[in-house]
Length: 112
Length: 128
Image 1 (tube, each protein chain N blue to C red):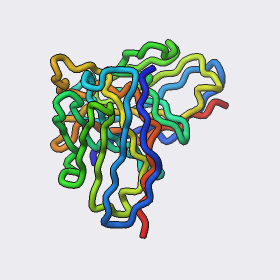
Image 2 (cartoon, chains in turn blue, green):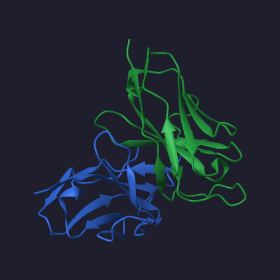
Image 3 (cartoon, helix red, strand yellow):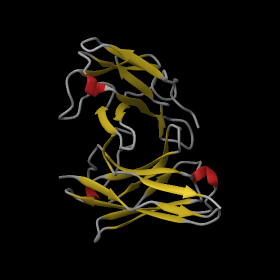
Image 4 (spheres, chains in turn purple, green):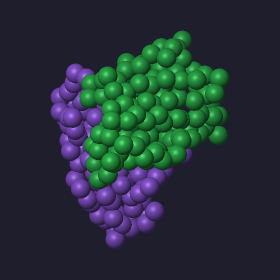
């Protein structure tokens, strides 16, 4: 299955900002503004934190922001806090035949 | 509050079928589509398809076409995922999740807008 590419891990110190990249293709991120980001702790269901590239659902901290350039989407977390340590993964609408949604492999964020 | 509560863990033999239930509450079932996504151990999430909870229309990933069936019981406010001809590679946690976008006149939007409410997941183990 076609997939999005994320770094396996990123880290940062409290108060810093980090950015997680999500590389797709012209069949998904490059052609559509339907990119979502999720936060997931082990054993739990994912939580939607960004939709449509940069929209934050109600209740999600403004420290989370999303953007896109070409085939790459990015999630930025500013003012890192210990509670941000989690797994983050991206997803996108895709026009590839037989599919509608593709996911990234996930990025483990460690707050040092 | 809006909630999706899934049925409990299942252990199945290869070749068998499994039916996972996703009970909804706190909103009108017929106003949203329900997606099904699975996560095999150590693997990325995988889109299986969606169900228009108003019309009952479905769209399945080509990978699962012919083996998966989504259905709903509107009186029970519950959506179901049936997966047949199970093999070891189907061992995974299966999630139902609500489409973020409300349907207008029962028509699901053409695109994917994100999934705003998730069930807790159902572990399905396929082993002889």
